[in-house]
Image (tube, rainbow over all chains, first blue to last red; front, side, top):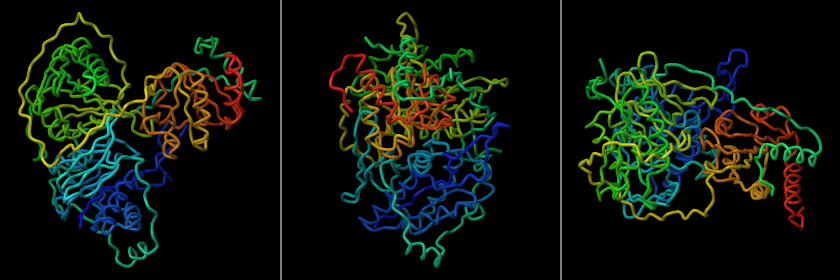
Length: 265
Length: 349
């Protein structure tokens, strides 16, 4: 019986982000939010461990209330409980302040294992897992592709650039799941029905947590955005060829050869 | 009022630009990502009129202590300890924290290799300071604050991030964002042999480590010629076609995030903001639409070629030479032409 906590993030689907060509600003309206896809892999890892050994999966997210839709999605996948950590006082948090709140939430839960996704698609910092491990003083391993229990310990595999590694972790511990390593399961109708009937999403505000306002949100964030600038476009030649494929290939190889970019012997 | 979880610090005491340097256990040399960071730190330190310090930790690393100096460091702090022969993020994190706590650098940079990405936020959190991930440049603003610059929104916009109330100012940097400086053996610097309490790893044991024997394949970040495929390639078989073209050109293949997500190519060959930044002489983008986060990864490419069926694909704005057409026709035509030029017989269809 493994008690697991999975942290997820409700993120704008950045693949559909666009820039207003007139103002040069981000068009935010109408961008759908999704559960960060790599966090769905973390949920999948938890559910596989639950399938194998039995257990409970609690999913937490710090977000405005719109993230309830995301929590319902992972409950539909088979998670048992969900906590929306939500308060205006948490707004504007950098990764330090975010990890502080999440650690304080997790500290109130009964857990053996904390699981995060490798990184998010909106900011891709991969910070929060290690920061939570630091607040809670837990052993941790990133980029896990496989986890199993052996004699009450968690044995995990991961790959770095130059090595495959296997670690044994005493519980409680924290892991992050390597992105692209697992295929998240679909939502099950029976689970969705349960979500409708039982309403397993709880909301925790700072009224409940009682955290020092100096440690959370904007005030609890040492890093601050001082300026945003557009990425300057690299000037390119922009020569375009349209027409027959063989003619196009000849045109291109001529151009490249002319610049000494190809050694064609 | 500040957060009671943050130990009180005196900002004035913090000086110098530090880089964490690691050695590749198998090859006994300092990782290239660390050397690149020393070059970037040198530039920043010159703007701040201060020194570049390198924290070199590991087992058997004392013999490498001169190297950071040759690449631009002024001071090297070495912790050479057998207990660091095995890497554990908590142990290495605590050692870096102890070492930097003693000397109080204003800026502390950690290479964002996979290990570094695991370690850096832990070190930052130990200081109760913030950290900026994957910065792409650094500057000093009119207030004298160090500004770490990173692309946040899909590669469109650069966010300038300052850390005003805490120290060190911390950042991580992906490999190959900065060039490797010239090695200069005439440079001088100081080496400090440090004794730091190395804690026992708690609750974690390495059971096995098998080096990945690289198939002598050039990593994309070092390749001179790259043929990259995107969503429009449509299949793994499509990538085999790109591989044939890459082989003929003496290059390697790579992919966009969508191609990686689809499972057609490995993540370590992903080009873009969430993958790798590349700097080939020639980058051929095949059926890649040209999302900003992808284009961000090819800024340093000398020449960009785009092959795309959609004449309105944004990639054409970022290409030197564009071919509007179906890659299933254009790439085989390129292959055939190259084979003819090279006199390779037995044309394949």
